[in-house]
Amino acid sequence: MIIGYKTKFKNGTPTNFVDRIMCERKKHTIRLGFRWKAGIKIQMATGVRTKDYWCFNNINNWKLLTGLTVVYEDKNGNQFFAMVKDFDKIQVCTGVQSIQIDNNDRLGKRVFVSRESDPILNFQLTEHEIAKLAWNDGFDSVSDFWNYFNEDFYGQIIHWTDLRY
Image (tube, rainbow, N blue to C red; front, side, top):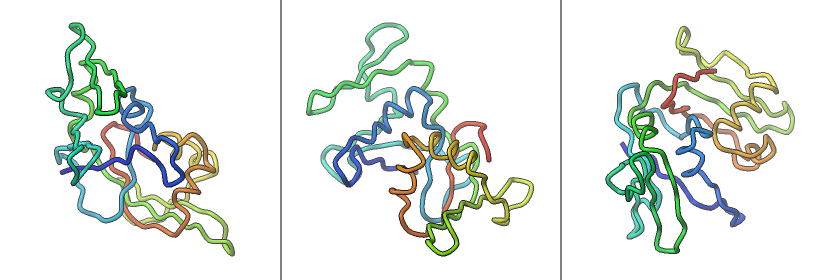
């Protein structure tokens, strides 16, 4: 299934998600809905449903620079570099966790996740764990995370690594 990534936030700043995924800084993505399951093949893309569609986790869409390094240049001249060995790591969903994000003024900001041993959303993340979640989802700060998830949210964390919360 396709996971579409924006290249810019609503305020116009770059998301850098492609670079962060390719250098293993972004370890998962948070999505609305519950359609993902472990074992599903992932097609990570920008420009979904446009003429600028780019499936960036498909090595055939990159140009080989050396035996170990590939490059992709978009229509604006932006270059993205990756290591050939990294493509195997981002091909399949390794697991999912349900997530509930409460961005509530009265009760405070809270995040709940399921655990593989218990699929019910009853594990509230600590402030430290929320900071890790935000960083691993590609945000520069917890503040950026809360600005993005500025309303209550219920969905899935889609993993392509062994990391779990």
